[in-house]
Length: 233
Image 1 (cartoon, rainbow, N blue to C red):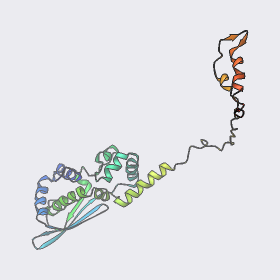
Image 2: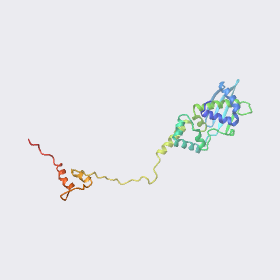
Image 3: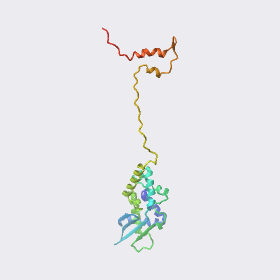
Image 4: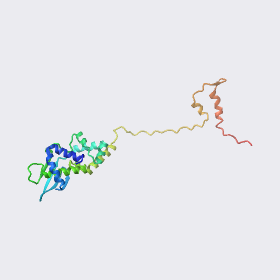
């Protein structure tokens, strides 16, 4: 068993007192005694061969309620890391604990198990074998663990997309955006004064015979406006 979601599922079952039975079930699963297994919301059904007899096993779990799934979906949509891990095939197991939920039960009373065999001590060998293959299924496709709790892959991804779109398209706060009168910006007046550069300079503290040096320079700059006459031969 890997260290992924399947191993977490087996660890939970072992903590519930199924360790010995799970070892027997693993051997039966490895021997190919589980002929088929199907998973749908809240229930897993398996066909397990024992000698010449095929037994039907069922493992049930309570699906999350609609409000609980809304909380899960909001958490996934709001945390890019959680969503990325899920798309990469890794369920953010700790996220459920943060929401006060458990992806896998921690009490045998939360699991409903039955088998057509006549074993009184439940879970029987056949149920334990199905549990091992179920753990392997969770490793191969973690979305199956979520489907068991009530949300299949397609529905969950669709819901996450809706949450993201509704967040991006949320209307602005009332009164925040208001239609404003158009603002007209007058074009800047073209400046065609060669001496304008003198006005950009700080006043020069120089005078010549009582005249400021800036005023004496203006005629020279004005001559730059007049194009030169034709060259003389």
